[in-house]
Structures are given as C-alpha cells and as structure tokens.
Length: 111
Image 1 (cartoon, helix red, strand yellow):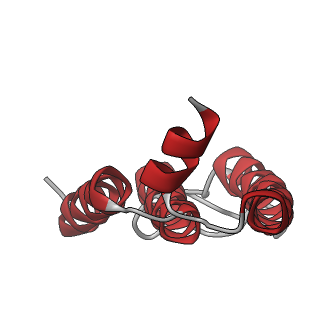
Image 2 (cartoon, rainbow, N blue to C red; image 1 turned 180 degrees about the vertical axis):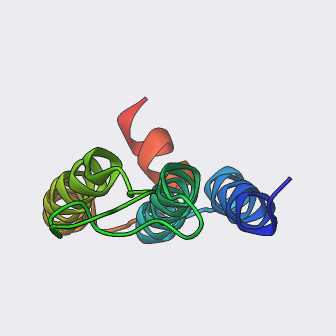
C-alpha cells in the first residue's frame, strides 16, 4: 500500500472527525474542505503512475500518465471553491438572521 494513500485516508478521517465534533458552522465548513482536499489528493495519487511521462510529447514514450483524473480533480477544486464560497455566504446570512453560528443554538431557536 502506498504511503500517499494512507496519509490521504488519515486526513479524510481527520476532516470527518472535525465535522463530527464541530459546534459551529464555520468549523464544519473547514472540516468538509479538509476532507475534500484529502479526497482530491487520494484520487491524484491513485491516478498517477510512477515513471510516467506527459502524453503530449512526441517520440518513444513507454509509459504515460493518464490526464483524465487530473482534469477531473481540477474541476472538483473549482466546484469545491464555489460551494465553499456559497456556504460561507449562507453562514453570514444565518448569523445576521439568528445572531449565532452555533449548531445547538440554531436548532433550539428553530424548534
């Protein structure tokens, strides 16, 4: 088992642990971003091949790196940044409406 995959898995678990114990909306958003970054690193480490070259070179290339996972992860990064910005904007709106960002206080005020 590659060491990068193990580290990515540990960081995903750290992100989910932070999500489970977070008491505020901002900490939850940060924890989800940590888990997302680790999943991106996991896919990139799985998609890479050791000793591979970029596929746009001419000549005798014996082993190439597949560009599809890299392109998909770039798209994932852009979508993740957009979702993070939207989540932070909604957190600001929740704070202006309820006056708190604590999950427990929000559920107590709502119900």
